[in-house]
Length: 312
Length: 312
Image (cartoon, rainbow over all chains, first blue to last red):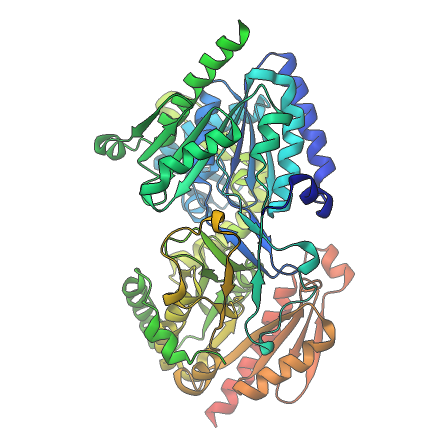
């Protein structure tokens, strides 16, 4: 049995930067709702489950955050205002294209004392300019808000706070829940205060099931929003059935199913009515196209249809 | 009982990029040994323990890699050739001072079609120029080699390969083992192939103790090198005793003990003869000084003394 979601909140304190983030979210959402914008919440990256209070060890869910970070760029292109709720240090839109050394290696240093300048090499400009231009447009126009989490408990608190701000958008809100959230956690009262000592032999970690937030999210927090969840499996034979189970259980609009091994080139859209695959062709892969471009186009089309229906 | 280290190697395959890294290491070490350089191996960041073969979930050891990345910069300043063996995506020397958005925000885009240029703003130049200059000096002169690991098994394979290359340096080799290596692992034959399903209830993870590589490293692999290990604790009352236990057990030269809570301002050096604290004063912290500057100076002084003794 999973812990009930209300019990989870009552037994886990909010993260320390919670009130700051809530204010940022409220200001961001109010401003854009007044302008009648469409808004997307993207969750991205994995959550951790601390095994000790002074967190040295934790259980993590693998996710670099590629899908969420890439998708954010495409949603911005489609005119969506974007809340990018990501695991701290996971990939972010725009900057995901460069790691630190790649940045440094693009730079020319012209040392002339107080007149020293640093410029991007011409071949770097070709790559960087279009990305930098889109990054600055999103920043300067305040169309993207970054908030981050680390533990599964941080994620819970932040997600509910975002939903409270998104409710006012009604059907114009799209939730794109791509984060890899832990299914299991160690109850706070069972976590040792100090680092576990290896002298006592290997520890035996007793995990509890994390409550599924999709249930209160769909039925209570943002009942009018268009909610998309993701299902990651490694066993293809259960992918569609598990995706459909989730859709039947939580009554949201779309599950994007994907296999760990092929997730960069293939996904399956499971809707209440049917299911269909989106596949990146070999040629598209070769041309540097990303599957997130296709996923986002299709999600947006579904969302726009949904908004139309809601209006009648 | 921990698994014996030889058994650990025989039951874990080397990482896929292992032979490539070994060649890079051999070339790097031979070149610098011919020039009679002093060399430091820095290990940095945490290791993961996969809980599934198609790794979705893993146990991780918390470590951003700040200590290792900062120390690498100071060792380069002290004239050491540096092997920076770090957890993939953990902090790296030089680039650690900037995250992706900080980089982007320093840049001015001057869009003029084919004559588009990108320059670093003047206030960004002040911060970036000295770091970029040192980065380029290390790169251009081939004085730093980056190799990375993710799992505890990757770390094991890579560390032994590095030691095989370092042995030729004799006492001129310094090992600065700052990585946070997992104490526990899940034996390969007990790892499920597919993602664990939450429907079956929470899993019970049975962990095994990881063998301590310090034992073969000190006694067999690099018997003449100056080996420094790190001990991180959250309980101050056992810090020095556990550090001394490690020194007595493995017979290396120095343990740097530190508390999770105060590790940025205080460490204790535990040597075979005595122990003493290194503390960053409030004024030094205020002036932006890093404790790694002091740690590295002191380690280098100890290493130089050791080299002198070895010569007689």
